[in-house]
Image 1 (cartoon, rainbow, N blue to C red):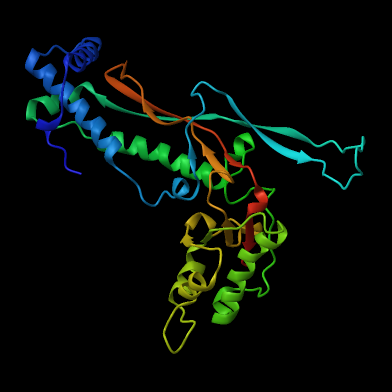
Image 2 (image 1 turned 120 degrees about the vertical axis):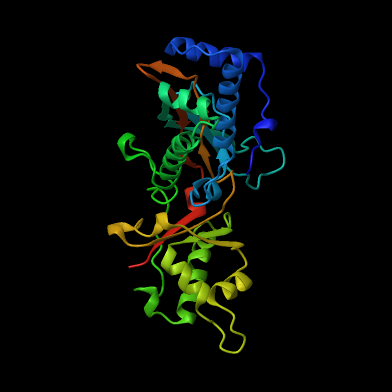
Length: 324
């Protein structure tokens, strides 16, 4: 996205903030220079938030929940279950069975991820002297570093604090596929059987309570089914055939995070119901920039996120399959 400097609005608060920063650094500018500096800061911030990184896919695959308080250190949710059942009773019976609803609580951690970028006094002076904007690449790099961390935690959790993600939750069943071995050695019919078997396993295991709608494959396995013809007559691929005949799966995606996610570092397939009822990714603060801080001959801009875990509310609505 192109952002023209004329489109950036600078109010008195922006100019006051810029002057405060420069005063702290001992840099003395006139009113026009200070206003220009404030406009450059605003330009950098706009550029940072407008840049997107398509290859970071955790937030594509996991419904986002930003409702938790940014100050929370833990997040708790409750899962209710019904107990008891009605039975046949006699007229005017006094032994009616009791039914009830019980709740279990699940608590997860919230952690902070942070980075920073900075400009030196000389960077500022040089930028103002030649009339160039401050280099927004530093801000973009800081934003991307936070985004990468969010993506990593969404995929595999944060091992340093004992959390898991979408691809390695211990409560999700690992399904043995009917046709084992490297997929490059399997026929188109065997590949289709594997895909259908994995999707059906969730429906069978949960007695039709859960139905998956999404399957994510490692890069090589996705590329194989997306290019290998299933029908020699029509040229329809295994992937296209699977999406046509499956009563459950509506989307098949690829994710490099799965290339070594299985036991022993083998590729892993994830099949699940992509619905916030089933799983959510708690991120109370997805990204924020704090006020610039003077430090020696530069000022530093801290950036910060508050990241929770991937809550798997119904792990049996998901299934893994490792490709040995």
